Length: 305
Image (cartoon, rainbow, N blue to C red):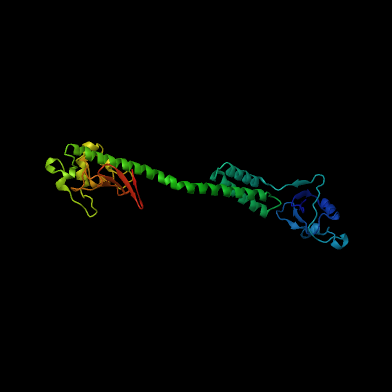
């Protein structure tokens, strides 16, 4: 028994040797027609199949020149096997779903994989596998959907990154205002003076002031511990964005590792010199003035919060 690959790319058969002989006589099979002998996986030209080669009629007798053979018309009992397109159709459906429904990687990547496999099969065995066009369409739609989702992600990532930063900046501003308010409340009972301008004999920290090279006091924790009753919670002394420090358990155990903000001290830093800087956040660059206003300083502009 034999299978014949027609000029239309379809398989015909199985056919007996008699049927093959009849097709040769009708000019439907020539020496170039590809045949597959039952039990063999190989396709060979008819001229290379010994029992068929002996039946071939030379072109001089038929008046025909060798060339692509005409389609074989299946006779009674002869089945036609159509190329399989299941994987190509799957790729196309997944690609349409990914592109139309914005499913992105969920169906776009499978569409690309199925399309690639289907196209390779169609190239290697066109008689057995078809749908190369559908597979190509599925691949393209899959690529487009994944690329679209990646583009959206790239555009949205900066906004996602800014959201926590803005929230932390707002919390930091709130902390600084609470500290400034606590200092002014403490001053109500001390003739309007901040702790670092009041002698230790009167409950202040004036004698403990020591300005660093950056203009801020080296012992901010000492000055801030005095206003513990006004602050209430030592966590207020931490900027929400500061991951290098931890809140103190209580004010009695307050250490430099529990304070984020820089404190300015000196006789000029009073609640009457409203423009003087009182606190600064080293992470956000925000400053608290003696009048209680927080200013966010950025290159080229200032923003009061």
